[in-house]
Amino acid sequence: MTYFTLLLLVAAALPGFAQTLRAELVANPSGKGSIQPNWSVAADGSAVLSWVEPSPDGTLSLRYAVRRGTQWSEPHTVASKRHFFRHAAEVPEVMEIKPGTWMAHWIEQPNPSSDEEDVYVSSSTDGVKWTAPLTAHQDHNPVEHGLASMAASGPDEVSLIWLEALHGEDNPTFLMRTILNASGKEVREEQLQGDVCGCCPTTIVKTAKGLLIAYRGHTPEDIRDIDVIRFENGHWSKPLLLNADNWKLNACPTNAAAVAVKGDRVAIAWYTAAKSSPRVQIAFSADSGATFSKPTLLSTGRAAGYTSVAFEDDGTAIASWLEQGQGGTRVLVRPITPAGVAGTVAEAAKGSRSALGYPRLIHASGGTFIAWDDPKQVQVARLTK
Image (cartoon, rainbow, N blue to C red; front, side, top):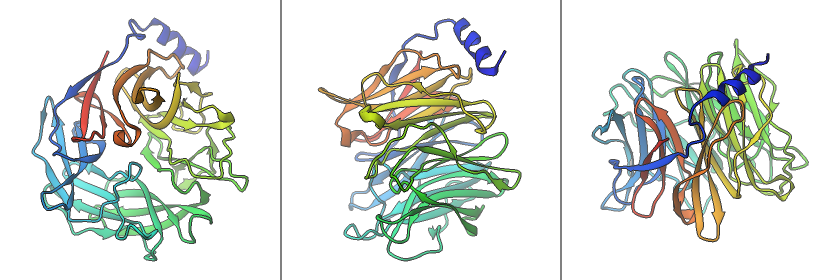
């Protein structure tokens, strides 16, 4: 009996799995006009919510708060009066890499009329006082450096993954890695891939065996499917094509793959419009990303992508995505087992496409939460069955 056959039998025995998820709005400490929500999990298992917030003088600050139990901590400011890039795909991240050691990254656009984008990092030993921002890349030409993601890759080390377009958007974009120490200073920079999709966010996670990166690849024929590479035993693997969607597009879709990890188990949800069929799919791995199941279709309508995914304690994955319809754009959520048994699609939020931003899911000690942009302020809901 195979691993996935066993999971299918177990999933079939789960009581009430097909119950519809409910999104219950939760008050959160983000301020009026806040945007670009993101999540991470603190060292104690609590949910960490970060966002970009305007000040009365019109400048912007990166802030975050921790939810312990049913209470939020006091919001803390990581950096203020910076040129934060206010784009739904360029979301900052605040993370506790070990108890008491914090790291944050974000993208700045100093001149909106230029292609210049830069990745910055800051660190903290208490989560309150943060170091002066440092550039996270060696190149300082006015070109695109962005679409970053971050994971703790050692006890005192962080791996920051980002894209670099040294020669403009009509030339190959590089997948890059910067290794940072706990104080946010660069240890080493390396190029991982020499030609990837230039405007799709990256995702890095740490499995039981090492690092895993999911990104949208690119071929000379303009095929833009999802690839995965792993760092195990001191070496990077060759790219693994997650699924041969064969999405040919002479443009950039600005649509990433979302990854969740729980030990050796990995879930990746992504969007494709191959064969003129916009859809969201999900695939699972039981060996830290060395192999993946065949994809399962998640979306049922006209999907717009911008996926997110999280594992719950029982091994069920919760995925979210955007769907376009006559009444506007909806944020949809759906539970699914690693065996491909999907629950009911439910609506978590609704609004205009531009207003919803890039919704994000997290599972932490307080439950499973989703956050999204709203014209008033960042919104948060807890998902329950």
